[in-house]
Length: 405
Picture 1 (spheres, rainbow, N blue to C red):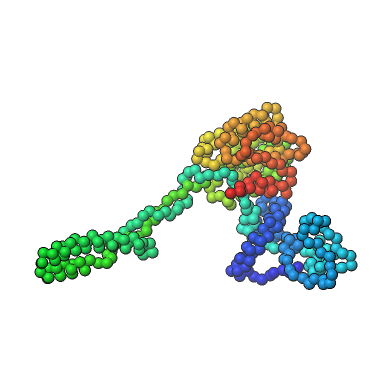
Picture 2: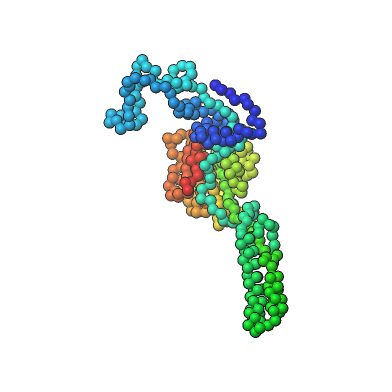
């Protein structure tokens, strides 16, 4: 193992780090996902040490051949197909120099380990994620401006001087001032006027300047406000008694990653946190993640509260509305069907995307809520199941994967 202990003075190796990360992005991303599955919620947004199997970063190299007569399988052989494994001839080296260490074969190779900074970790964590179908709808709280060309102005700084437009103005002015003089000279010449009178007109004609300050024109630019993406994410979490601590931990992990993703990737995204038992209430971030209250289960109460808040504070024609719901799916009586109808009729037509994540006891048994939701036919609704910590991050990536352009 080689450990590079050189100081990173003035971040001189940043370019090499970025090049390395770009080259082995997929392997690093897998290590980041594994690391996230082992972390606590509070440590989720910190950097960390990741490792890559040495065989994944091995470079192709030229090696000394065996020499002599050999049997080689070339492409197009009718007996072998691509991907077939051929046994190494007995008693021969078989093209050594693989770089393996102790033990037998490739499994003895050491992993390559290095440390990611917090920003590098988060960039890899949320790379290729986005809120689906977001559109720019409103000027809203304007924070973005764009400079737009707005013709020409007689005043400005030298860097904005338009040479072409200035020369055009100068030419027009010279023509306008000289033509009457030329006509007078022509008339006097034809009439046989004294030479002094004609010479005076010629001097007057020559006094017209080639370019004047009045001819100068400067490129004009105006600052124009740009529409911004205004979005709101509703986070609905079931905290009923059937949600054990393990299930709540999975739900909080999902929402923690979702929260980090939204706050890092988007400047203007409102978050609405709703906890529900048999009753639903809007809570702040601290209560959403740390309140220990529990009770019965009525899913409809959360969906109803979400729809009320949408109507009251987030009109669908002005906001990109998104929803995420995490529950164990245990609902009783008519609640699943009423929830399905409420979601399908009143919420889904107004939202751009709705994700339902279930943390079930048994993956082989379909929960009542999941059974009801599966009958909803909407392309902008997605469902997923999480049973362990290691599945939370892949599910988030699957739900909010960037759409192909």
